[in-house]
Amino acid sequence: MPNTFILTLSCPERPGIVHAVTAFLFGHGCDIVEHRQFDDPIRHALFLRTEFVARGDTDTDATQLSAASVRRWPTSSRWTSSWRTTSRSACW
Image (tube, rainbow, N blue to C red; front, side, top):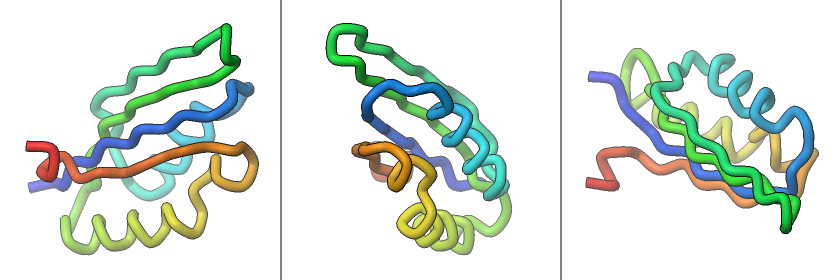
């Protein structure tokens, strides 16, 4: 059974953030099953929630994705951001 994660992110609104997030997930073999975003024009901020599935061996995927996200999360260095990845099973 694939491991499902939920990513929540908030950061200043700029072009390319959604692309960076989706390309990162795609590059790690993940499948996005739900994505919602909200742009706050008053605060010039972006908020997003992306639910995705890591395919293959769930333990390996969870470990690799966690390690990759700490080192190379695309928005960490280019944009000031707050993000968290949570296993969907931890939410229930």
